[in-house]
Image (cartoon, rainbow, N blue to C red; front, side, top):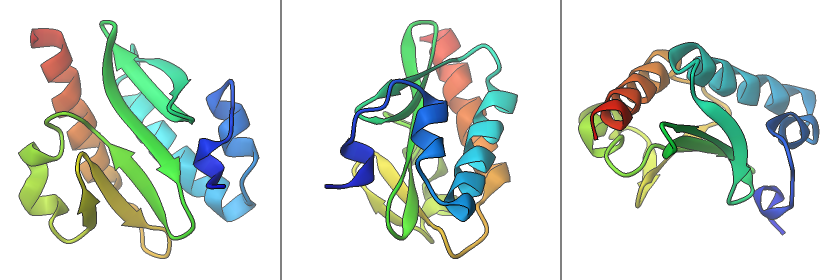
Length: 121
């Protein structure tokens, strides 16, 4: 069973179950989101950390064996397609390898884009 499919009630609980190095990566992503969208509500959705703003989904993230999955649906990925093209992607997701530095600035810009979308739509 993938660790992201287990049931967690809080983001703290989700992060706490990981090894120290993975906890640090998850906290980097979490901090980037919280700094960029301080009004966003943090919760667990689909078994992973999630954020919503104005009662609408903002972004999600999850840890896997070899990457951090980042989900900025529906348009956060297409708006940054060129910058995200160096990463493996799925429909509505991007994979940041855990053995490479996380693109914190890019994550923050995607979150800021999604905040703007949520405030105008």
